[in-house]
Image (cartoon, rainbow, N blue to C red; front, side):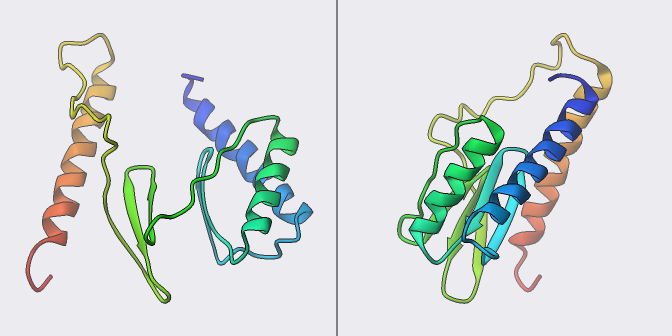
Length: 137
């Protein structure tokens, strides 16, 4: 990892693994299926199918997968809290309890491009959040 192509290779590998695992399981099509590299958000109607999918993912990839079930119709996924109901999902920003709210040191040893991208990411997030909370928007 660390190479620019590392993320691309990881995405391609996990897409293949996930496709094979779903084909192999009794799961014909999940209600909802989203993935970011090795983090998978999947909605199924039966916990046995979920366990079968997890097992297939492990066998095919050689990786270890854990399962988090929703509590009170809430489930954190990446840095998003997903609230589910029978007909919709609502999201909000989620911070892990261990989050120290610290950012990269601007004087740190990394390229200017990387520093610029960190700033852009924070600006994009600030714009999205400010739009979300504007009344009538």
